[in-house]
Image (tube, helix red, strand yellow):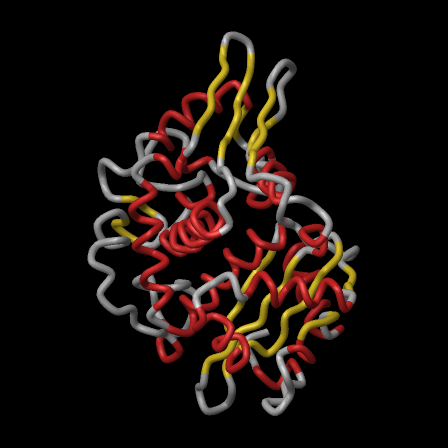
Length: 297
């Protein structure tokens, strides 16, 4: 999937023309990758395409330019395991591009529904326990998916974190500029926080049934969220790697500061009731720093 010729990319085409169903050859690779023969392409309606551009323009201006210059395709896959995925693509001369796959469920769900579904997926359900994320109902889940995946695209193309993906061959890597410690002070390596930034249970996190999960029983959630509150990370998902850290900091800055929406995680169980608001903690300053790096692309 890393070969540009796989996509039938026409550099003279408009970005609007590159938003649509995933080419069958690419879709088949996704089916094999996730073991999901039920994956199907989805064609967004004109109104849904308009919403994509509306939300894209809520990000720093350089992001839309990046899409127009470097996105070979923005596709939708019905039944996709997760909200989205962004992958690098290279041409025979070594020039780097990207493609993005999104779950069309984010076009129908609210932000709160999309984020609640993601959060619940890392826990084994237990009787008497409830977990939800409140990010308002004004915006669709597309806002989160597009903000998060666009941050990954910028990382691949411009180098924001020390390394966007360890699987990118060295000749295609974009070296990150100085991040003033945003990632280097918090991460010892791609997926290992430095001593003092980690928290118990983080290494067991999985989402959407991938990675053999879920592996964490819901009664363990209070301890996990206490660890998150004392960490520099803005979400459980963001504590998986520095690449996810960057994407989550960007997404939640735009949701909370850009869209003016809440970001509250509510957890309730026998003898337990907690509200966690990560953007009121240590992550808030890091989120602002992350958006400043994105503004420089």
